[in-house]
Image (cartoon, rainbow, N blue to C red; front, top):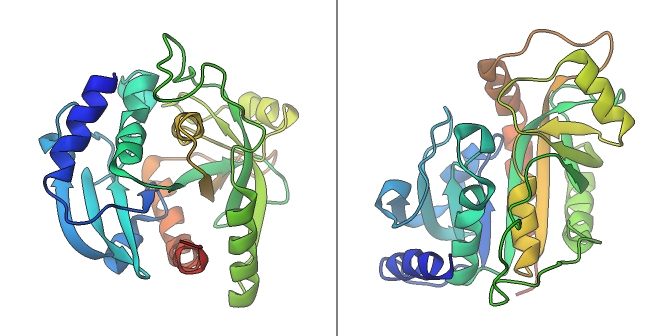
Length: 271
């Protein structure tokens, strides 16, 4: 794997001018952030050696390099999922490449179903912890050059960045929730019994991404901030039929607020 990561990173380095400081995975809810980036280089995933190809509607499939609030960033316009047929190591391969490009922090976004009865559709939830029900991307031989065999996960989501976003949200009058995200394989949306189960085991929201990427980021020592838009509810009495189009439509309504909070976070980070 190390050879493939290096090959991909070297290819990209030949096409960019500056080293990115921050990596952003533009999942559902952060697509509009692309318009705020002063884009310098765009590289389609299909051109990058060893990179997977995104197959999901709403995921653009490009690496975007540029500036946002004065910081050099690289944004993944589209991510990869276990339900697409990729193994966990393939899903998370781009995160390793971003680390080899020089990023110091990773931001991640997604859409999820709320199982906390206090949540409403359109809520923005800062992820403070997770439950992983997707195969762990670290299963298999470990390369110490990438990270330790048994990485610590006592702080999967960076408390300093969470505090910055909470303060920015308060200043801007944006209500944010905090909670535990449960990652499942998909691609089916959850049954009522599954929603009840996720709530019982401690989740506030459930989705089909993010956690494998966070595990690999922490394995490599990258601090992570992650945020989720609640696009549907898995709460008794509020469960309705859900489609992917419904999720995209619900996420878009909160996209502006989420984009603003990410911009504020970048603005307030120390170099």
